[in-house]
Image (cartoon, rainbow, N blue to C red):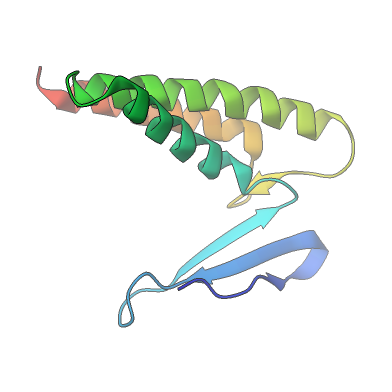
Length: 115
């Protein structure tokens, strides 16, 4: 169940997310369009898995999706943050740097696949 966003100081937004009725509460902080970084990466992974089908290696599909998402987030984040219309961050990290997180996840997926 997602709760509505509440404005914080200096343009930050926060959303509490409770995926279970009893349990942990996640707090997502973003500024500007920074929330797009994880959304783009997840959508890229899901799109590659839908196109790839179940006949191919799932790890390879995840890696390709993560890398495509990383490229998209890098260029979109650089473009948005260079325009001068504000800073776009997710969890206090500028949007374009989430591309590196996606690349690290892709490397971890390759190293732990065991194939």
